[in-house]
Length: 360
Ligand code: UD2
Image (cartoon, rainbow, N blue to C red; front, side):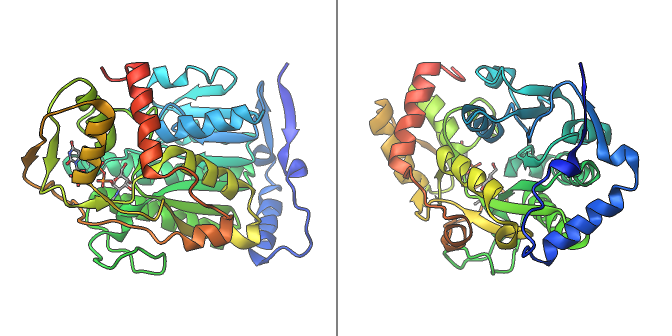
């Protein structure tokens, strides 16, 4: 039997001391509440949380953590890059197959939801270089559609998977949030546009939004089989299969590789943080340590038993030389501390690829 709900009545508009952002949100909600279609939903499975990109690496991991906590979760994925196999173990999730480039899918996905984790994206720099329009559709259009649908549905908060790529060419390290973004690839531009849309939705509609700028996330369930996959996933698969990996450039470029559990934890913290602290904010989400590709390759050789050398090739178009985060803001606003460091994360990751045979 489908349930009827007016979800403005169940949202926690509790504290009279909440800031202007929240007041604006209430006003926006009140205005929207004059349109009956916008305040009502029919659903056979009312979920509190929506995870977009739920069949992808990060979305899947967030959904699993929410389910483990006993939360009601809806997931949406188009399978453009997400994998059906990643839904194994998430059977308790209400799953919707659809493309966020379609506003009707976003409306269905957001109905009855209180908090959205917007993880869906075409997450690849080289893919955006090859197909900037596709990246724009799946990152910018999709994000705007999610925000419009979230607002119409009375969603309280939208969390967004931002990217360290927005810092682009700025050579200053570590990257701090107050630095001017200098995106140099279509992917970085698209991720930054998404951030700006979130900020605008907080400012003009009072929707609580939070951007977490992820720095090179890695871990179990990351697809290792695509040319566009993250480097550590590709290296894990190749080294475990005894295949020679390719390093683009001299291998001395570095990244603040961030293990997935840290990202999941930060998302849960960001979902629960007080609006007056986080609404409309963006912050780095990383470990705060730089590892070069050559270092990562050497550690992986030890973990996988691979004895060969990497092949070195021309640097990739749009590559950033060094990326390292200052993570003080996430500490201050969320109480975030990275619990799993690079070496431990890589051990778990290699063990997972070995046991699951993923991508083999
Ligand atoms: C960017 C973002 C990251 C995330 C990601 C999309 C930066 C600094 N980071 O990651 O936060 O948004 O996009 O998911 O912008 N490489 C090889 N061999 C390979 C594959 C890659 O050498 O087989 C190199 C590549 O040239 C680059 C490094 O590894 O120098 C990392 O590449 P990536 O694709 O894993 O991630 P990156 O840094 O573009």
